[in-house]
Amino acid sequence: MKRLFDFTLASLLCLVFALPLILVALAIRLTSPGPAIYWSDRVGKDNRIFHMPKFRSMRVDTPAVATHLLSDPGAHLTVMGSFIRKSSIDELPQLWSILKGDMSFVGPRPALFNQHDLVELRTRHHVHTLVPGLTGWAQINGRDELSIADKVALDAVYLQRQSFIFDLKIIALTFARVLCSQKVSH
Image (cartoon, rainbow, N blue to C red):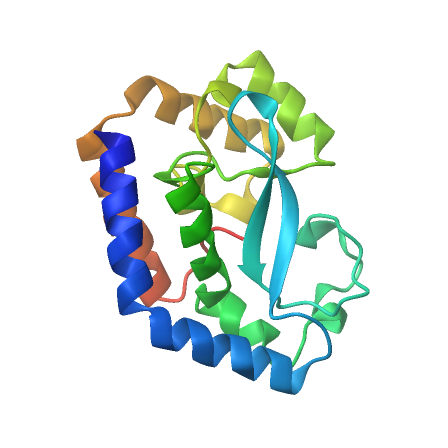
């Protein structure tokens, strides 16, 4: 049921957001050299690597590490970068990953391929058995402000509590947080 919901909603959102997706891609290309989409190697279900698209918010020469590990993340942002991150527009291309089945709307955020500490801890807590999500329980409970241990603990709570109703609650809370411009999933 979850896969059917994901595919149906992602298909609908691709239609609804088709024009805005094109406009954002054009704006990125016109204001910054390089591609509009950045393909990031991420860790998916059962620790398999997949390629996750995001609108590019950073310069093309930015190191492939988690943003919080950069000494001055703001120095790497493109002209559009701050806006598309604050509004979470950079996440919209991930609808492609949901359509493909590499991601779900709700699950633990996919780790970067080089976040070995996060991947190892998730594996220890069996969180790696979940399909990663566009948003998740950890994202609405602090995401970047959380330690890796706290993030994995919240992911483990999701593993235990996962249900369609819980997913709907997480989606609603994510939507509310994005509208209020609170930090969610990056």
